[in-house]
Image 1 (cartoon, rainbow over the protein chains, first blue to last red):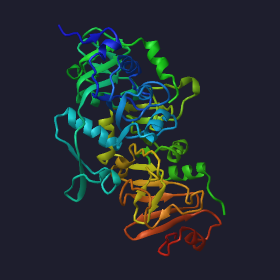
Image 2 (image 1 turned 60 degrees about the vertical axis):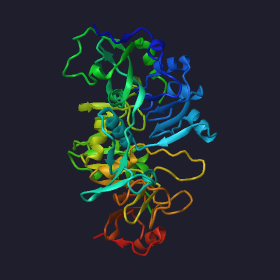
Image 3 (image 1 turned 180 degrees about the vertical axis):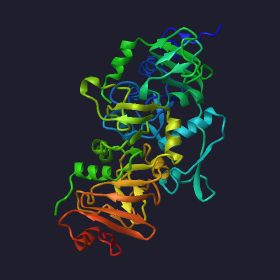
Length: 232
Length: 215
């Protein structure tokens, strides 16, 4: 029998090792797997490379992980925000490495990894500092930059509902990076508001098929909403 | 002269958006355009965090932290709206499926180069977001910005001094003083605010090749 549900967030992240590459879902606070990150802080893994769209907002989620000094490198598209003070301080102090990636290129590199591709040629960034030192190629009448896939050891994502096979549906704009990150990690861990009986999710509406998901942990809905209630 | 305020600039941009257009509004100034879309046109707003058919800001009681725009502000969804993941969102953007994107800018050059992500200053933290993807992907890119910096320097320049976002991608620039069209023949003034003479504008912009395109 397949049962991917795990009792607690701490159990779900127990094997994250020092130096791991971790994809973290979310766009701002929407879709940020706060409770999995809290568990990761408690678990203690360090020297992590975090791949996420932002570099933390306010005091929760990714911001708290950065504040705890567990992150060696951030790969993201938009670190600078009005409430990204923990990242800002670490970056200015030279205590964290930043790889800046255009948002669509970040998505495409993650998708490439999940789909088993060796990279992508994208028109994004041609002629800009973010393409410097990278291979470019003319295809048809247009120039493209070659970008490598982004693989990870773990993906921490947040979805709305799951079943024990790990099938996932999301809620509104909290979907963002979740479905593509789920494909690109060796171990994808999803926190969800509800785990329903197998067969209850409409197969036509399942966004992430369970094959991509290793573990599912139910987080109390109220907690999840409270964590989200922090202003973006 | 009657300099346009931000709401007037946004209304002027909105006036040019066609019925049925799929549009992405960049964060900052362009977001204001959403408040001025003509009521008699169906214009579908895309937000790169995975929404098509985005509606206006909700009442405070109806805010949903999982329904936000690219600037992370609460929004609503209109009938017919859809949600999708970031891969699909940027396929829409990069794949040329958006009719229009309105972006803010630090500088735009006479050849349509765009600089809007990084000042390049020492200690500044760079953040690019989706700007580079939008710049290469939308069928038409227009910029909305104040023409002059607070220090009195023109942001429409012969050559961008800030790091570039995209090359030769901007075709129109809406400002508080004038509207400029950019094509392979250079820059033409399409409109000036009331009371601003073309020669006075040319002196502000500071390049002789500026042409008066008004009929």
